[in-house]
Image (cartoon, rainbow, N blue to C red; front, side, top):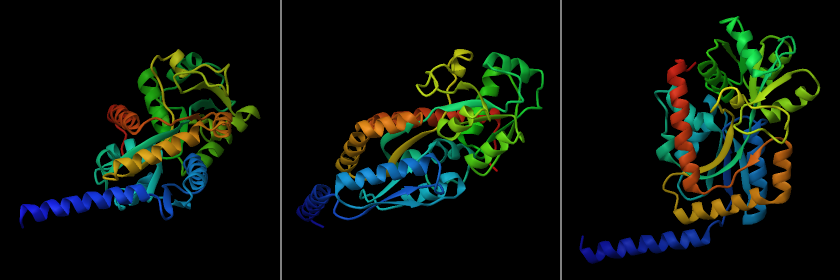
Length: 320
């Protein structure tokens, strides 16, 4: 093929790319939530989906694609056309945790998915059943060390945020708790309230009502800073410096999606997260709104990937 013909094809492709980007969006968008309805991922998916529909003028349809700890839905996005019409609202598990536990991951989250923005960070709360006679992190550490291998903590599943929060606590505090996985945050919380397990690490959205009703006792926040939701509650980091654990939620799209489309989505979602009603609603549930740049979110994902990889290796956590 002549050089002039190749140049013509390149120019035509560039022209088509620019035209498509300028015309975006001109049809409905799928926003995949890789978990079943209910829970933080579904909540933020529907919030962003509704607001994007209003701002973009096209329907943004939330599609729940649960399975394999978020891997099935995330894989569907990773393999979708990179045109901005298939988006992912993900939590840490399928992005920074599962790759360390699953040797046969169907996608590489660092290569096959392009970050758009962090949507929210939700602090987790370290809680105990009221029968556990401790009120502070220091008291709990002493109590747990005297009962090594006896105390149990629940989580939403193997490799989930609650599991890793407990594993990190053991590493930092020198305790030895037993992890008991459940199929979701709801069952894990019910088991804790019933006294089947003694301890839990879960997002504030799931625990606030039970704490206020006295069914669970809050010991500390797992965020680095105290939460406005419970300003009197100390952080684990005040006793174990540097400790931080908790879910975050972010928007991603297939890699190779045009940068200007990613930029458009970033600006729209960031504007949504700056809206006073959205910020107020999120903060009432303990969530901290995001809205950073794609580059900043990519750096956050890389840091989280490396951090939780170390915890998984040091704790010898294995997949189910």
